[in-house]
Each structure stands twice: as structure tokens, then as C-alpha cells.
Length: 92
Image: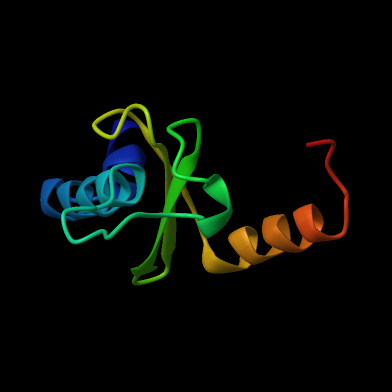
């Protein structure tokens, strides 16, 4: 049985490669992100900031905690959210 398991296991190198890919998906590189606030924010500090010029990613953060957590979405997820906001799908 052990031999069968070994024969279908990934090599340590392949395992490390897949782990690195997964980590990059969980913690994307946002060092080049340029966050912006909506012009409708009125200059207040109770807003979210969005970075859209990232490859395959939209990043959103709280303007009060710029070094805090960042939510990430695919461009299609973000577009669906924006369309829902504009159509009144959410109670804001």
C-alpha cells in the first residue's frame, strides 16, 4: 500500500512549486498598487480605496488603515459588485 501512495505523490520540488503558487494567490504582491478613493468620498476618511491597475486583480482597503488587510477580487467579481451597487442591489 505504501508503494502505491508513493507512486502517486508529488515530488518535493513539485509540492514546493504548488505551495508557492498558492501562497502568491493568497498573498498577492501589492507593492506596485496605486490605491485611489472615489471622488464621491468628499475627502473624508471613512472610505475604501481601490487599486485596479494590477494584473488580474482588484484590491480594496480601508482608507483609515492603509497598512491593514486588503481584500482582493478578480476584475469580473469587482465589475459584478459595482453593477450591483449601481442597480440598487445592496442597501447602502
